[in-house]
Structure formats: C-alpha cells, structure tokens
Length: 263
Image (tube, rainbow, N blue to C red; front, side, top):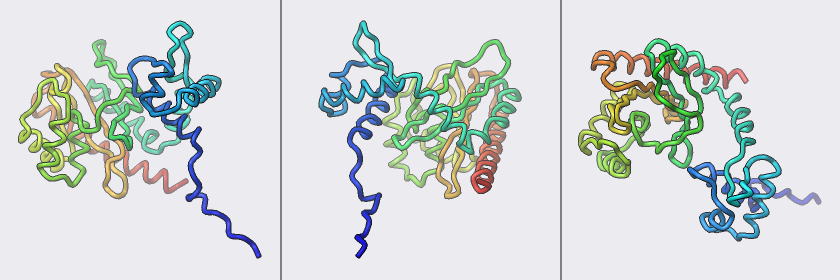
C-alpha cells in the first residue's frame, strides 16, 4: 500500500535559509556595515552559525565584507535579484510610462513605493523631471508606511477608527507635526479624494502628493508619489496634481491587473 506523502506546507523550514534571509533583511535596514557579533546578537543567532551563513552569502555576492573594519554590508548581488523581481512585477511595468508623464507634466520627482509586510515603504522606481534643481531620491530607500503623504494614502485605504489613526500619528517622527485631530482629518480627506498631501511636515521645504495603488480587494500594494519644492504650487495647483495622481494610480492598477490576467 502506498504511504501518503507529507504535505510540503507542513515541512519545517530550513534553518540556514531562514537565517540567511534574516541576515539580508537586517543588513538592508542598517545605515552602516556591522560585524558578525553585532549581527548575531541582533538576530538571536549563534555567532558561529551566523559567521558560516555570512561566508556563504559573501561567496554569492549577496553581502560585502570590509577586511579592515571586519564588518559586513548588503552586497551588490542583491541588486541583480531585485532587478529581476521588479522586471516581472506587473505594477512596476505598468507604472513606467505614467510616472515619466507625471514627472514631465508637473516638474516633480515621481516615485513608486512598494508596501512591505514589515509596514515599510520601499522606493522601487523613480521618474525625474528635466529641471536642474531636483529633489534627491534613491531607489531602495525606505520609510515607515504611515509617514508623509504616502502614509496618509495608505491609511486612507484601511478601515481604521480615529483612535487607531491617532496612535499611528504618535509613532511617526515629524519635522513639523500636525495636530492629531488635523492628521485624522487629513486621512479622512484622502479617503474621500483618493489622494493625500504632506506640506513640509515630514521633510522641510518639500511638498508631496500621493495616491495608493490597490489590489483587486482594495488593499494598498504600492503608492505613487510626486514631490516638489514647497510653495511652488498654490492650493488649486496641488489639487490638480492630486487628481492626476489618483487617475494615474487607478490606471496603473487596471493595467497591472490586465497583465496578470494575460499571463
């Protein structure tokens, strides 16, 4: 009699793989390299096991090693993997042309942010205008999912009560914090309009408009943002940019869905 095969979903995880992923995510979140002991302590790993995993990751170019400081950092090999993944993502592919159009139309830095399970936003694509003075943004940079205009756009798509939104507000590092009630009102306005705005409250001198790109269930997956120097646009101009961002976000979501259905 044939014995039933074990369900692959019930098999225990491979510890070395879990450790490698944890190390890569940890190094990716750091602003500077770190030594083996510090990495192991931060992740609760055995230092010897951590060292062995790091050596394997180093051979695969997924981490780099400074022989002088004896510290590790995320390697350039991760960029190759990221490019492969992003090249296959329907949202990223669908966003390229609309982003370039928005950047040229509004002389803004237009970013596409991916929402991670760790409640962070990661910049995965960027379109810039031809203006000489530009706002500096780098693909790969991260920020808290609730921060700025992008954060308001994410919160607006979630069924949160006022107390939950106020709790989120308290956990954000602001340059110029809005009153909690003002922040709640901004999130509610973003839900009604389909786009959110931050006028220098996260970054002094920079205004950002953002609209969420949602999946078929209405949950935010990505966020589209347009950043410009504060004071350049009046309220009417910002409204026009917001409406264009919302329209672009909806179009990207629809195009991505069509791509996914066609594959």
